[in-house]
Length: 448
Image 1 (spheres, rainbow, N blue to C red):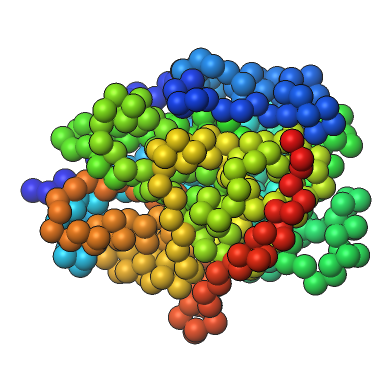
Image 2 (image 1 turned 90 degrees about the vertical axis):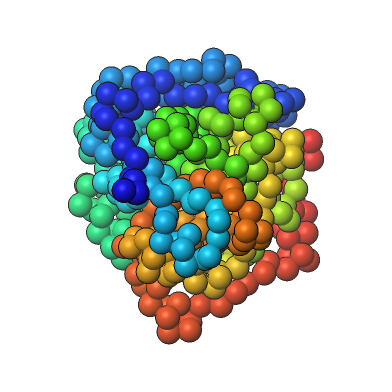
């Protein structure tokens, strides 16, 4: 009998996170203070982040213990299943074996809770009462709302306006967990009011929402800021995905030749891929494929440079693939992939030719998502559709070549059905971000 799902017991859940930073060839360049252009220490960042997370952000320890209180919450849904996509394989006619790590089983339907829980825990432990954050598709806002409630914190979410309008049930989920929500740009912050005056019809961007959340956090002693992707400590927390997958693939008596994930800020893909890096460096032949939207192509068309993480230029300067901090993307329905920059960890792995970035269009991704729903029975989030499309490309490039493909099913799409409605009605269109527009958005990169 075929084994469809490979499950781990609660006591087999990893008790340590894997920190990939010490293993990346040629390392990472440090974050810089935007005022001095010198490497940034923890003292300034301590105004909006707890010290425990800053220590993780800069740590060179390969493994970091997961606190027991964090493990207790993660065990609500972890370990997550590893699933063999037999039906998708059959429809594609491929000899590839396709597995996916189902992160859609979390209480909020995505991988984002893997980092939201420890972030809320470390903030609460240091006496913080309130968290401010941004959200694109609403998955991170939902996750932090859930996690904040678990540890008795208030949560303020600045939600990118286009997603605020497109995804009403994400707002319902956040409200259910007790969060307050504002459409970004909002009237609550100075930067929000300024953007609204300049661009009254703007769809917003993650860069703007980040600026609002940071301004909120910096203005209150009881409030810290929380970020759902990009930063090193977020990638650290997400490594639990890949650590579980390694155990599960061993049970399946298989090993991935190809690892695929969608890329917006980079955390879900890095969470699956990074724990495999040591074996790759030891000679294992693994192809890492990061799939991004053609409308927001930071890896395939952006520049590896120091840049701000937000529009208001309040964040440290991060060395990352970027389209420019003032980049405002089109309103594609994969809201979680509409960010101008990529995690420094992912960017460094692209720099070292470890990760192969590819860009795909919106319509082919929804087509792949519908095929997956009809074969495997799970409706994927628009972001996850990009990983599925990348997987299909890999599985059908050499259709008679037997290989093992592992991809991260980063979240389900049950709260994204309005996007599917638009797809079925023909209201969605492909969008290539023009080269000239990319060049214009990168013209204001900081001079380092």
